[in-house]
Length: 275
Image (cartoon, rainbow, N blue to C red; front, top):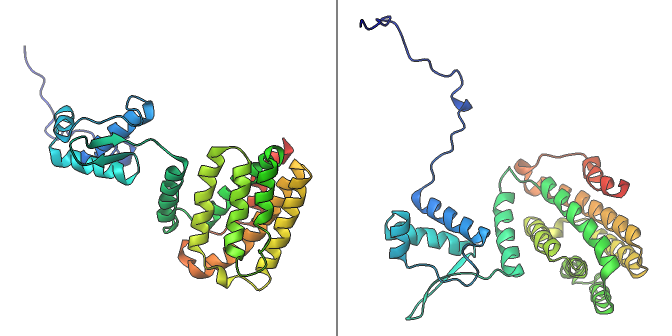
C-alpha cells in the first residue's frame, strides 16, 4: 500500500491564541502537598486533633522527600492549620480551629492584600457595610441585658482620649450581640485592617464627636428594639466613616485607590431594605 505523500510545506497548525488553553501552572511540590493535606482537613478526612503520619511516612505517601514535607507542614503551620510538638509523644497535629485564630489569619491575609492594588479601601469599606448593617439588625433583635450594658459602656468615654479604642469596642460589642459567630469572624478583620491602614490623627477636628453622635443614635434604636432604625443608623454611620477614611487613604495611599461614587456603597445596602 502506497503511503500518501505529504506536502513539503505542511506544518502543524498552531492555535491563534495561546492563552485560550485552560492550563494551570504546576505548583512547587511542597505547595501541592500542603494543598492536598488542607483539602483533607476541609473535607473532614483529617479531623481536629488528629496526629499526622511522620515526615518520612508522608514523604512515602506523596512520593516526595522529607524536606518537601517539612516545607509543606511549615506552610500549614503558618496558616494555623497544624501544630508540631517535640518529644516522645510529640508530632504534628491538626489544629482545633478557634474563632480568634481564624480571625487573626483573615486579618493578616487582608492586611497583605490591602497593601497592594488588587484590594483597595473601597473594597474594605463596602464589605464592612454589607456585613455590619445586618449584624446590627440581628443584635437589636437578640441582645440580652448584659450585652446591651457592654455596648453602652463603650460610649462612656468616647469623647475623650479613648475615642479609637471605644470606637472599635462599640462595633465589636454589637457583633458579639448579633449571636452569629461567622459575622464576628469575618467582620472584625476588615475593620482592624482599615484601622491599621489609616492614621486617624489625620481625621478632621469634629470626627470623634460625629462618631459619638452616630453611636448614640444606633444605641437608642437598639435599646428600643427598633431593628430597622438601628440598621439604618449603622449604615449612615459607616457611610460617614467611609467619607473620612476615603479622604485620609487618598492622601496616604494615592496609588492604591480606585475611587467609586458614594452611591455605589448605598446601593449595596439599599437592596437589603427593599426586600
